[in-house]
Amino acid sequence: MTSTSDSVHTSVKEYYGKTLETSSDLKTNACSLASAPHPLVLDTLRKIPQDVLGKFYGCGNPIPLGIAGKSLLDLGSGSGRDCYVAASLVGPEGSVTGVDMTDEQLSVARENIEKYSEVLGYMPKLKKLREAGVPEKSVDICISNCVINLSPDKPRVLQGVYDSLRDGGELHFSDLYADCEIPIAVRTDDSLLGEGLAGALYVKEFEKIVRDIGFACPRILAVSHLQIYDSELLAKTKGINYYSVLQADENELDRGQTATYNGQIQGNECEYRLDVDNVFKQGVPVKVSGNTAALLEHSWLSKYFTVSGPAGESGGPIETSSIESLMDKARSATSSCSSVKPACCGSA
Ligand SMILES: C[S@@+](CC[C@H](N)C(=O)[O-])C[C@H]1O[C@@H](n2cnc3c(N)ncnc32)[C@H](O)[C@@H]1O
Image (cartoon, rainbow, N blue to C red; front, side):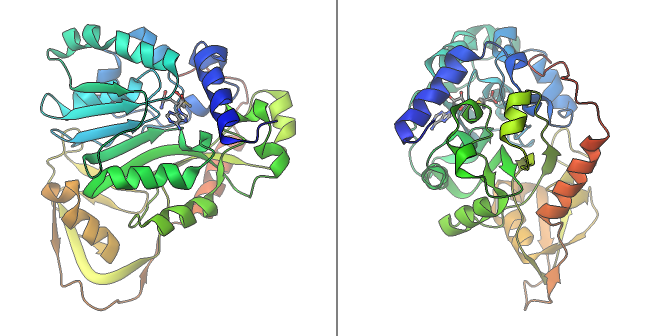
């Protein structure tokens, strides 16, 4: 049984540093949940050393395209797969900082940077930090892949992310969520912790935390249903459905605005998918909510969008997909699938 913050950290370090050798040792399909990465990302994955790929324990693809020159932070970067992908996308002018607390994972990430730089053709500005210590307002984009569920103090972690972001910065992350509040017996079970099943947040709790901190218009990029292969873990979590979710939703108000995408994000020239509800074809004005208009006008995405319209009085809510309906959809998509453990996702 796990209770204090220290014992949670010790247990997590033990799990990712010693218990797991490669992603095929995981007891859920978390690391193969995401849809296939974008071809640009796939191309980069082929260049990443196998030692790094083999210890990938993420549950999604939280790295946006169009980030050349940006400063990116990967919270809980593990063996560094996402840092390596991001280093290629931010290019020689951008920088990537990976933060992790497990020595064994950090070593793999560090040891392969030189080899990777030979393939990239330049030495990426890739820093690997043991502890956070990231200056306030220094980061354009923070990514995190299946890490926040492992923290015993999620509001503190998310507040740290918020403080590290520049104005207009964004957190893109993938994590595990439950469709109900998780009972205390599950929350404190060591065997469920490392796999992300004990610390997963009820999706409504997550929404409250990020709103309280001040994050603007959190939005959903994708939802997938998690399958648990291990019968003991399955029995312990009976009645709880887990999902991998990329971000969350918000009520959106119509303020009479449209946004037009200029097609200049490499790899997304024809279409840019901001989230499940906002998809932009190049050159075609799309009606957007006040929150979305503000994000497209003031964040790092502003150079790719033109927002038109007066930002006037609210014309009422704009329909957005509810997390419940997306979870239902994801669950029915997996109910017809085989529960046989697939080959895992460590290799490209
Ligand atoms: C599920 S693994 C994911 C690793 C990596 N994001 C990936 O996709 O392969 C979780 C990682 O988060 C790290 N971690 C958990 N809590 C942390 C914390 N509070 N600070 C830094 N790293 C943390 C663990 O050491 C582990 O490497």
